[in-house]
Image 1: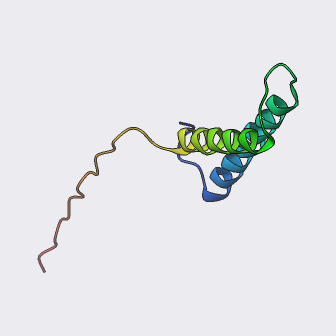
Image 2: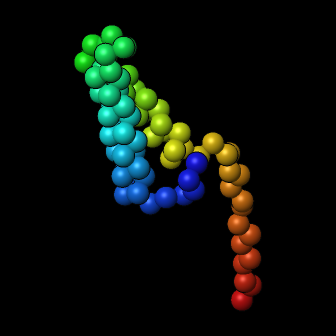
Length: 75
């Protein structure tokens, strides 16, 4: 996890992970030693990209919310 990021940064990070993983899937399709269909490469790359994006931006630590103390003034 990369920490609490703003929404735009999380979005860019997920899109970058998708692009990289789909590119890797297309590269696997282009390698002649591994017989894969184009659709299989795209689906595998997109699935890996979604999983990588989730892992990158998800907070796996359960944070406990602290209760705030409220002091009331007596007039």
